[in-house]
Length: 173
Image 1 (cartoon, rainbow, N blue to C red):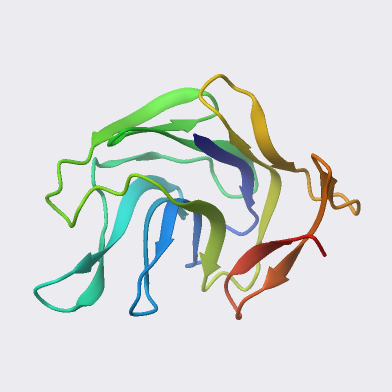
Image 2 (image 1 turned 180 degrees about the horizontal axis):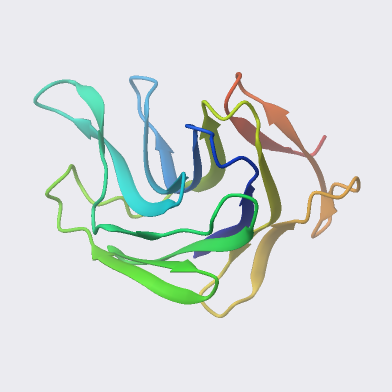
């Protein structure tokens, strides 16, 4: 599948982070594993949160494949992660920026899981639009354009805050 969203970081002076998450899986310990495409200031990078069995805790590996200039603050940009097996392709405004093949050097490759949006230390100074999940044939699995109507593919849903910095999707509300 692929997960994408339009993102606008409103302030050039913000120190926070905005992520689109893919292959999110919850661990029995209560933590999570996932890949995250991150925009921090004007840098876009692919990263991974994984469980380190030796240390017994979750760790973040930043810059799996390097970085690329992101859109300047105040401008909209579409960011996208596309998953096929253990290969992840990352796009910005429909241009391929990174291809990463997870060979297991940072925990086991993540082969399934959910999607999400996450931000931290942003003072909520970011905007999202057109959050979309698609199948490999480009069939839309899920789309939210963040209008007031929360209905897609026969299901009513809402975004609900989990804590101060993350949101989850609840269906059947």
